[in-house]
Length: 356
Image (cartoon, rainbow, N blue to C red; front, side):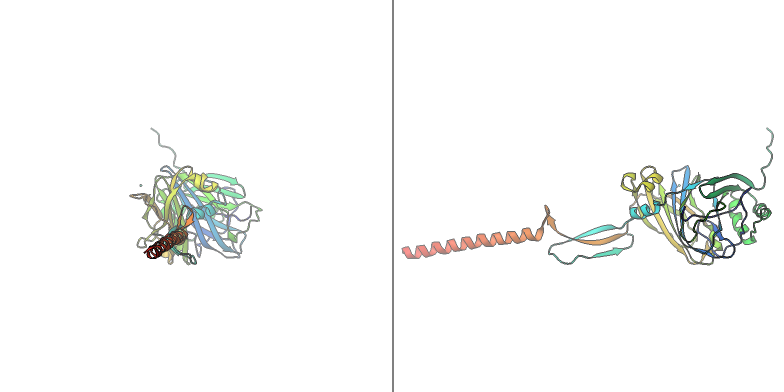
């Protein structure tokens, strides 16, 4: 595998890594580089598919890194299954959002031009342990664990017992999720992996039961650099932002249209699994400390279509023939007919004069 995501927390027999309060974070959670190096996320892209009962999240990160190990943790509403995602998905997603031409016809031939523009829902059981390891598995080059805890202090203690170091500020942010009963997905490269962590990393997919479409953002409040994220939402209808990460920051959509599996690439068609509406949100959070909420999405009042457009000039044609040639031919024909009539009329007058 060329480039892959790395570790989040560990469970049971997973090898421990140093987990500190990161100087930056990715939008969906917190990614922490290993010791002796640096790592930053230049861009994060995510596709959220929600059908009313299940949410699938596919993420891809573009990183700048000089480390060979890192940590990543993502909170999710329920226990998630994790798998590798198709590398072609985001290229196909970009193709599906290609700007639409607004055609302007012109009559007389001249140089063409194109101008881009922006986009126009009995006996009590024994209490569970403070920290539960819900699953621990290997997927490809990944070691993946699902953790559950309603007590951030217990979660922090568990991490410390497994040779993790978690700062109080990070634990406080995790408390926003433990108090709601959320789970935590932990992903790390398996021992011996030589995957490159610099550049565009391979996408990873998570799937979990959900009552509404969400994208976790609150852990990103620990970042010290601007955060840029694109979230594309696939759902039975157009989706509006019901909750923005920064309450006072507007969250306008950049694209919205129906996705027909027969009209898009196979990776996007497989994820959509039928005709779905794609709504895209692209945002930059200049001051991550202002992030206090997750993205939450709700069905819009209407499935209005939104595209970026560009002006395109085309020569006016009729039945495939340039209109100016038809008009020119008509003018020449009229002139020819007029000339014929004129000379016939003149000849007739000359003949009449001679006869007299």
